Length: 307
Length: 307
Image 1 (cartoon, rainbow over the protein chains, first blue to last red):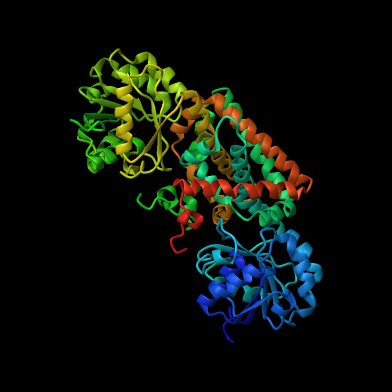
Image 2 (cartoon, chains in turn purple, brown):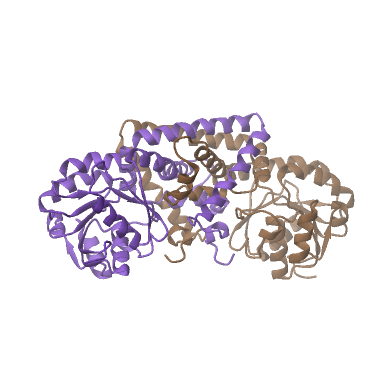
């Protein structure tokens, strides 16, 4: 096979939102002769069989990865170490082993020790997703125009990195290479802290005594509903993110809280100038995100189609 | 005119997002013989003239409200008191005076003293908007299926409340009547705190030294971009909201911070069960918001059309 993005056999350990979307996008780009999928859940395997995005489905990881040229671990971070241990003896010599985890230092810590000689371990993280989970939520365009960050440890085979990079490019992504520690800090502010804040405010709203749940729901178009999307994300995945990117998240949280305390003080003392100054400068970032093709320019995210 | 929702002449003091959308929706529903619009800005009047959503445009408030059967103040909250004082002598006896401000106690405090005898003052608040501002951002469907809350003070003429309620219904809204104090508390959690949090995290991200602005923008699809929408809202309007709903916002902020501190502690001590419990229960609220017709069920708000 001369296409560096193509593989004979791809193994997906985990076929939820990301795993199933990789399968759909692989099919769309014609990158594999065979897509093997593993799930421990009979319901997930049945859903995958019904939708048909895998050529074979497995309830055993070792069987799934046998003869695979690339193995992609698409599990919550806490499950990656045990999965790597389970598949290690069955990996085909020369295969690429990668993952899609949202934290990279912990992934290297947990998977690294299990990687046999002759296997090319290249950690990866596609910055793409939706609030939905499971094999029925995947779709072929999920990675289009989104970034995928690879964090190869020093000494990683350059050809393996190039092949994985070509693969993600063929799935629709733009690819960046980054140090794992820097990745974890960047994602702490662009993804982990936003999720934490969103989960938190939705929880706060749910616990009020003087404002009813029904009022929160009815009047959510005032802004609250924007937060509920990412607060509907998979709880296991996000628990594992916070348990495994503790230092970077706590550091960003500390800065966020400091800034919020300053805002609180400005409100308490009626300091309108400070409020205006902050509120005026935050618009620039959204404009840049839209210009970078990472956001819709339509009002309300375009969610009101009639608008 | 037998339609209780219809008025001979409507005066809009302020023709930004909300004022212009009221004009468009009024036209769509055929609710007025004449729509008069005021703006102090020549650029805004020129834009309104070009788009054509008003029958007459004014640089003087008193002229705008003369002979109007209903006057709708669509200005930032801090501008409402002076506006009420300026128009009071010119109001037509029997006219309805209303507003669209996001805080109701302060609006009643600021407008109330200026309302002449024989004028029916019925404060109102449509829970609808976008992140865009100005006369070019308005559209006729903005209020469709959104709630509009009226907070008439005790003793307000029931017929005036009924007519304003019919008017908002004809604009596409669903109407609720509420105590002003309760309104301000409900909106503090469903709208004001979400905006504050969003402005804050966007500011925190902009101030980092170790993560570049360009990285925040590139990888914003990880969750951060969701916050930038409401953090792009009109800064003057939002400054005035926080200056005028201080107690309720500070109370909600206090609760939010307490909850966030508990989450921070759970992360620091590796308490995965607490994290999972919160992350698991927040999904229910989003489902309810979608079922209530206040949110899109499409993944990523439907912003990725290809999805």
